[in-house]
Image (cartoon, rainbow, N blue to C red):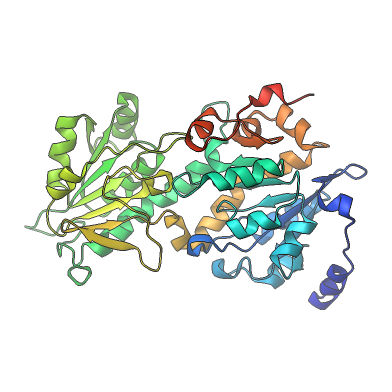
Length: 404
């Protein structure tokens, strides 16, 4: 079938008002999925790539993609249509045709205006940038909200966060190397060593997936690496996984003060599940750092872990405070948009297929534990007490609202 033929088919797709607000077509168990173009925070990724669309189409679902949604990741509209997607030409049209919206960034204020009653939205939550109005708008429309950060399997792993964290950890070292250069007002040093000249010291706060990925990348470039965490089991894992090439230490006041003073690069990789991060590096500690050193606060999407951090953007990514370069871009993985889109699509696809395997959202959540854990809004209530404390939205336990 030619591209023009597909366009003609797309023009014939007309949904009734009832179909527009329903996630499923009960007669055919059909899921209508919308992939909007990301507009927030200079986001360049797309949530599902063309090959994932083909899988969903083969399972009998409809997929609507906003024109240009994959362009920044070098996926053309033609690639989407050739895999069975329908291209739509406005945000309003996309949201009106789709029962399930699959995004990367949480809906913007403008997108919240397009959201229909009882739609389902899967996206990141990014607590560091959200406001109370976001939750108020979605609870009033009884939207089901599922967040990447909360989706957790039976082993306690967060599969979507993990894949993005691996990329962010690798990127943090790549970025730090650039901002250590003299023309970026850095210390003018290499991450790695050459004969007779010692390497840079990279201090990583947090021994989770981001921290391990960053440590692996920094060691690969020849840096001296130190990882701090409060969890001794994470530090044991780091030592074993990296063949004891990284120095590890408990993240107490003594070791933290000492490590920050010697760091050429400080990478904030702290993540508190479902909550805003605490500041563990004070402004006084930053003042004690070497002039021209670099802070990469990967934790900024949850508020940051360095007191002097503030959110920046890919087009204006750094600021200098107390002689230290701060890089605080929340969607750092977007810088490698094609790799990130592919990895995210792979991680998301099984959960979207799981939604499509059930007749309604209530049944899907009752049957799938990771999706239920991932749900933070349901039937007009917030299902996470931590979010209720932060944003003052009404809380109700999700188990009390799900009926099999």
